[in-house]
Length: 328
Length: 265
Ligand SMILES: Nc1ncnc2c1ncn2[C@@H]1O[C@H](COP(=O)(O)OP(=O)(O)OP(=O)(O)O)[C@@H](O)[C@H]1O
Ligand SMILES: [Mg+2]
Image (cartoon, rainbow over all chains, first blue to last red):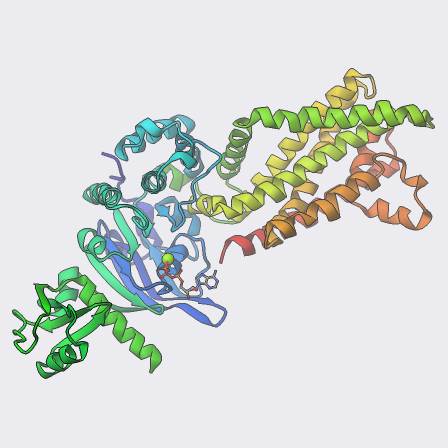
């Protein structure tokens, strides 16, 4: 199979006395800080990603997701705290860290002056493969991402989805232990997204550790073992998707579409039933009920959709809370 | 990929593979547009050389100590053209590569800023060398430069590549926009091309301008090239050589610093 089935390097174990945790911990952040002038883009973040796990960073624009990933990739100096990859301190061993890491940045960073295949081969050579190894590996990843028939195309001729997949393919050239993906499917049509998901799921089956950011709840729910929900440089909560849902949104939820009835009347009714809700666009999203939410007989003409609570409800609850703290 | 890990030393020294790979990438990109590149390296300088040597040369006649005007001007044009290539590579092309996140991608591999700067300069040297061989080839064919001077001219072009590649990198790293970047041509390349003893000896300039011309970074390289072409080297060329080394020693760390500031945020 494609990605790293790399044996653990015993040198890793020597790098840190906490040998046991190294063998299972792929990424660890302790009180990580990133400042830009007076702005604390990452404000004391701690988390731990186990080997083979897919860990998602969720949060609104500017939450600090990209900043965390850039520090890990050595693209951005760490302002405070500590960051480890396979037990290696990123601040001290940035080069060794990057030799184990595949990175897909928010902008694909594809080389427009080279063909698709050359993009892969040149990068493979850069990470340390021989020219021949790079050729063989390029064929493998092109096949894996079903880009084989585009090998001699120019990058500019590719669709957005193909470009994204080529960027992921490039990150795999060096058979990394850990892959960082900054918004892997942003801007892709539904079919391309699902394709990317399938390919990422395949990597996951091969025991590659993935750290990804996303704005899509369905993506996080589908791919991530655990999720950190971020806001203003902090992690508000962390857990598996079902844990987060039951903690912050209960089990059942409903959406109310007013269809012309008075929004004020709906608010009164919801308050009377002591239900938590958020108004999102035309909808009232009602969460927090355990079991089926009660009927609201006084409401005429509205359309009520009962559904299972999901990550979106969690995100709205937590991000909303974060926003209120900001204003306080 | 355990091999990469083993091959990767920590910062402090240059990982040759990084330099080699970036250099190779640039060469590949250049070779993919070779038809256009051919006009830069051959047609354009040939036009300048022929116009100046044959046209202006007819008006100037013999130059004392240098032979014909064509023999005087040919080494200057060889070096001036090499300068344009080195500056262009490290300002314009580098700036574009910054904008297209090329270096950001390279830095996700086990590559340091040092190695990026080293590779950029190496490629500037490569372009300066290609240009020198092409332009000097013309002049040799016309008998304005002896064939035996070619290795010497190539050596001087290495200096042209590092010094002007370095200057190009400073502009690429500092320029907020393409407009600002174009200053490297209006403020640096064009004045130097004309006032560094390329088209006329510095001694014909007004007294107040002569010291300025001697400090200009292209002057020592033109002097060295002319010394090589005429097989007539003296103490002034020792000064020139040391000046070029000094400039390189100054520009390299400065370029690393400014590129780091530009690329690592
Ligand atoms: N180079 C920089 N200089 C100054 N501020 C920056 C820089 N890069 C990021 N920031 C700021 O840091 C904060 C966090 O940005 P970051 O890109 O990490 O957010 P993000 O969670 O990735 O957002 P998005 O979802 O929009 O990608 C933002 O307020 C951003 O404006
Ligand atoms: Mg981002």
